[in-house]
Length: 191
Image (cartoon, rainbow, N blue to C red):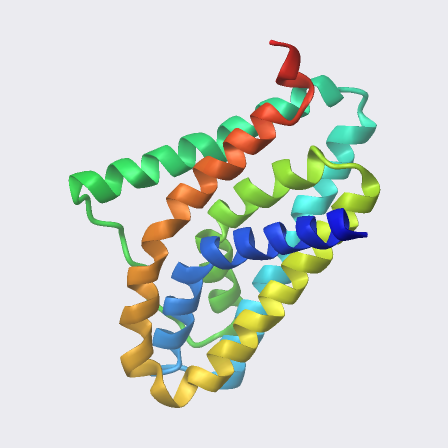
């Protein structure tokens, strides 16, 4: 039971750290879009991303190619190293404009959730079903917590958005750690 709880907590932390950029954008959207639309778009994008992560993870496990699942750890590892390189070189990240329709907001958040997808999919694929569900529950709790935090922060959005944007600097390091964990704790161990 303790192992499942800790694994759920690690998935929760992974989702939160890879969604700090989404949270900053969400707080920024509150300034120009109806709060309910922005929150609905964010929540729907998180649901889609987590569902797709689970579908891909289960599909990989059921295809009889579990040996290759460990190599999915290369995706968050490479993306994390790329993020660290961008931070070190001072490269600018392209900002996306916000639209008022929920579908545009969902599309915006899905495009910003590639890092979360890249972390959650290998984490789920490299886990047994019990741990997979624990991770999904932990990530869902994290997503709900981010929605609650954003709802609470809506009146203070103008002040909070830049703070969350600065905290996003830790996400590449978390992605590197998750990638290394997946590479080390998988069928690639024998290499």
